[in-house]
Length: 353
Image 1 (cartoon, rainbow, N blue to C red):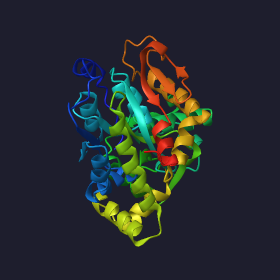
Image 2 (image 1 turned 135 degrees about the vertical axis):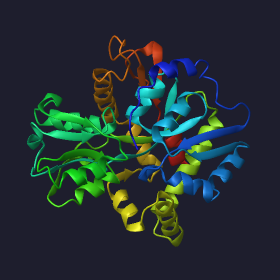
Image 3 (image 1 turned 45 degrees about the vertical axis):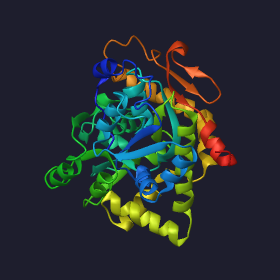
């Protein structure tokens, strides 16, 4: 789902005039792709919740599934959508670095075990030393790996990375496990669930060890009208209220999400357990104001620069400014392209949408 593509040069060309909303008038388009924490967007469309909130503000909002995650972000960056679901790292390294002033409008969840590292014949990260590891390079899996290595006094030089697509990674690990006693992989759910089921496989590190660092959000153009932002936030947290309830409506909502995601209900519920969903708007707003978010984005921008996700010619990691709810900025204050306001989530919490 979260594979990174370096599209910076293309984005620079396509995003001339990207400060203008993708569609003039009162119609807006939001892209999303399959992931446990984003499946609610389909429910929001099918249930009529989005239409209700859009009607309130006399606008039209279309929520569109794009099956290719990176392509959805590329399309947003190129101006074909007004908003798109993406991780915090991808928001920085694709649209923000590409020149699109973007706002993290809704912090929906963070990975709390959905991303992990699995080994055969090993019980710790230190057992990775000298091994080959299958991974989607320059993805949040790669970020997870560097954090795990750093926390254990290791670097990427201690092992060999084998770049593998997310579509193939589980199958290849399963095949290799039959002949290679040192097979290793770093991936996310649902492939992570598959590789963990291999006989003799051990999960040695997962995103619960770095809580709050792999963040899943709805990102929109910063110049999107307030009424559009309010409608999106209102619809999302109405869906969260239904989804998290013990009512029949809540159970049916989760069932519909599992079905649309292409898995079974038990599989979807298992993935929800490793996804720290912000079901309440106040929790999401508090997270956006938390000092931990600044620390996380410092880790993320350092990783991104060191792995040339800012582009080969970027002089340092300060070329893009990242602004937080209190107005503070890390990076270039004159080139703020990624923003984390709590404003709209707080409005939802206060019932002021």
